[in-house]
Image 1 (cartoon, rainbow, N blue to C red):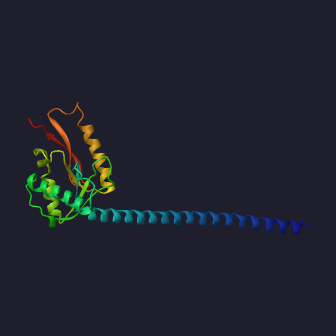
Image 2 (cartoon, rainbow, N blue to C red):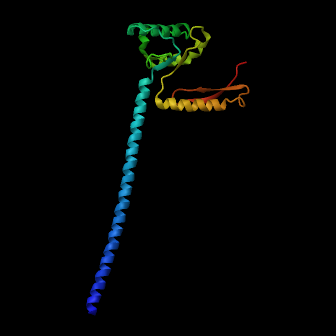
Image 3 (cartoon, rainbow, N blue to C red):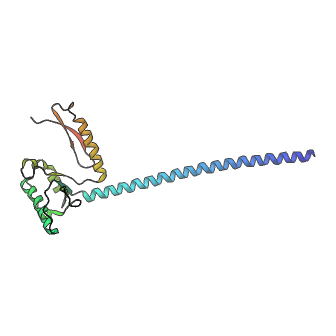
Length: 206
């Protein structure tokens, strides 16, 4: 009888040890699984970030030679050719007579209005033949306000969605910096190319 009790006690201890080892192994497996899952999530996040950067880079390249003109009067509804000719003539006229640049129709690779026709004047997108020509135009846009015909026209970069968001944040900082209390003899303006814009302090012209 005593021997049987000893055997039962040994069996109980063995089962307890087995249960403890099973728990240890289970915890180790769970920990390893969590580590592997975290590693997979990091890899997936890295792949997605790389993908988004690649898409952003391609989008920038597609827009690299583009500019957008705002407040360009639209011609009455007509044929596609008539609309393109009207917008092209206006753009070339602005380049020649306001910006003092030699720009021809061959320099305009594509030109079209953004969005559907409505009560508001739609922006005019112009795809140029080179980045150098675009830079010349952007460097001379200040001349527009010196003319009667083009003084209300605004020319800007064709920015990606991310660049537009960054631009809005920079403009917001500019407004804060240029509050009436901090103006004095200076004004604050946003300067720089898309993705690299910053607020600069300029002395007011007397």
